[in-house]
Length: 302
Image 1 (cartoon, rainbow, N blue to C red):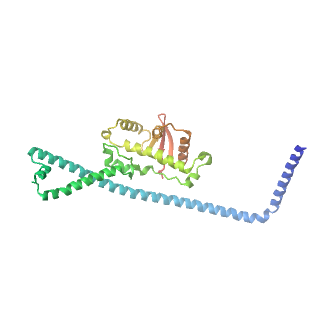
Image 2: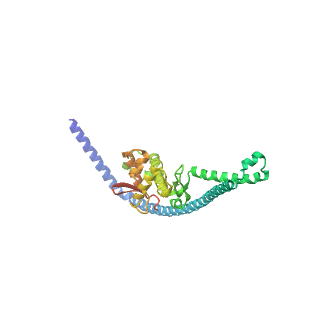
Image 3: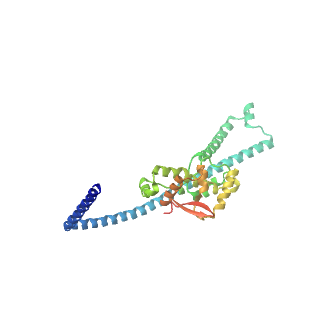
């Protein structure tokens, strides 16, 4: 009996569905003009949205080009100022060494000795004081620039005095070439099956704290002069990066090994999934070379 009742309910549902379809067909002539008008407006809206997207892409490209030009000019001015400070520091050291040599050769008493015996004129001390102060400020300025986290283009870094520094910088440069923005709207464009339970904050954090520092540290070390690298670990990495430089000429990339060294473990499924999402957004491109998995930076290829 239960099966008969269930079957009868299914039959009634089908009958109701048929009645609904028949009633809609009978009234189709009444709503057909409205449906056609709605279809036309939909096409108009679609066309307007496409035009807006094209205009936004052009404006975005223009803004990015202007931004790069302004930042490059600022970086060039900063580099010139830094070169002047370094030259002053070197010339001050040379002057000091020459003075010491002359005093040693002539056997002349030092300023400290003259002061102790009261033979140094006060005018001489007043004249020398500004030079020592300016020298001290120049040295401090150079040291301060080493500790401040700066930003510059990779092209400008190649021409900067930092590539010849013996001691590595206390903080790596943040290259503007490796900047990418992930908004909530951009994140929502990723298919749901690919996102899973990941959030936009987690993806941005992985990009900003893992991948971007990998690129910055690699290309800061790669372009330093060989004679300026004293640390054995840095020298080994410098040789490895130069051996891999021929993989993709003209393109900036890191490897799975670079990421593993950064996070101090092998890439797990979550990290691999984040990389897959970044590839979908066009920030990275995965390529294999000499059995090495490489990730090429493609975010700024407008």
